[in-house]
Image (tube, rainbow, N blue to C red; front, side):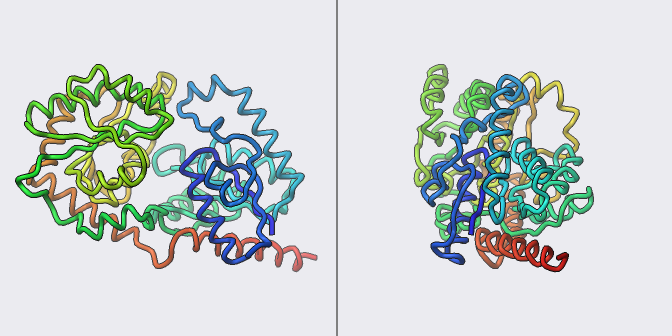
Length: 391
């Protein structure tokens, strides 16, 4: 059986590789992987059509600057899939690229079986994307329990909540085994702050100065405070360059083991709003989120329709986690909020309880990748049965 993946960034690649492994358990050596993937999917046997790092960009301005190359890759991917005719096409995240691929494939090959994993965040902005998704895919595997409702409400395709891959992450399991939700560190230990300015160069450029001033202010207000800053190799040099201006510097951590170990001992986190907020939520780390848009995206900020941009807040159903957007990214305010979260205050207790409830709400019976694999195989069989019945 031939399964094609279409994705555009590292997080989607990890999800894809887990789904591929689950499919191989069910299909054995007959499974053939094609399409687009990163290093994780390549380890599962996929030879990517091109380097998906070309698609890993953020912000309207960056997309416009690379538009000709993106359009070429779009046409190349569509031509490849139509020629290969896989049993199923799995699109993962990167809606701007992957759904355009799916729509064009659907137009030229209506019989294609297309399943989406990680649908667009219509709950935050552009609800019209639900209908565009419905025109392109047969079924959606949702990573958040509230998404099927949103998709149905806005005319999207059928969706199934499958759970989030983070729920099975070994680093998270280790944290929870230590009863991370129990409260504070021992009084004799210094407070520990996580600093997470993002993994993309644009995010880092826009947030590092503010995060540096915030940490400096906190260090003055909380003598002995220590901080950790997990980094990925591709941006380590940039991080180190920006840290040269910080009066007080955090410890740099590289690698997943070091990162999750820091998550397990941190009292609070200052983070760029994004997927990392879910990691922090599931690990029980109180947080303050911040974000600055690139200039072009800032001009289009009115397109944001959701009441919050923070995943933990959507999952909780109320403003559990403070979020500071653009001109409200003020170090003096960030420092005071974080100080309250690193001491035994009502604010800290409220966040810890809300984060515990989030993990409870997101719990599922089976690992997400297994559920997604079964969903894909059912969709393939449904399409085949439908063709036979129509004949």
